[in-house]
Image (cartoon, rainbow, N blue to C red; front, side):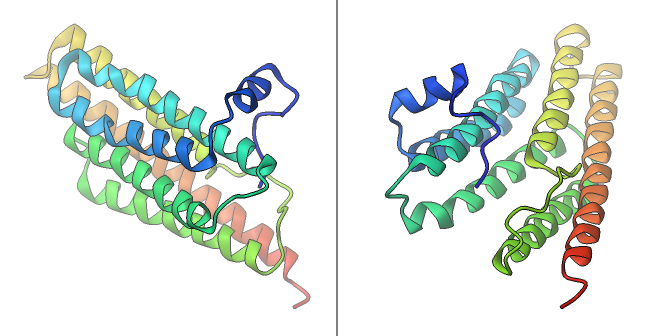
Length: 204
């Protein structure tokens, strides 16, 4: 497992000094993600609360990866639950975008593409492709960045113009663009991954 945060960096040293357990940071990240739809349902400025919540989930992701690489007693339960928590996090974001007006079909297709991407990468690692040698457009960090932009735009519109009438239409348009961008990036990332895996397994 590769961490995006170097252990010798300032952030890495702070994370390691906290002595949090990997399972604890997974729980924190999942809880933050599950609160995003709650803020969306409350509406108005609460939509902007999605930004620090997504940032907290991203920090939890980075912390888990770093702590897991340094852990000598990482439980099998955490290894099983971590990818499940990640999928629940993304499902929560997609549901929140749907609440704000994103098309249901686009939300469903995006979720399916993300699931296929993760499954493909997981299967590739199971057959020995631990290091695929590239970062694709479907990476978790890309999803977090795109969805944060979408909630940021929706929150600003809700605060500035309200959620009714033209304001609601603008919010719907912003989250539709967000889901569409996420969907396209997920599709391209999956295509990149399939090409790399196929090339690596060409002689099998």
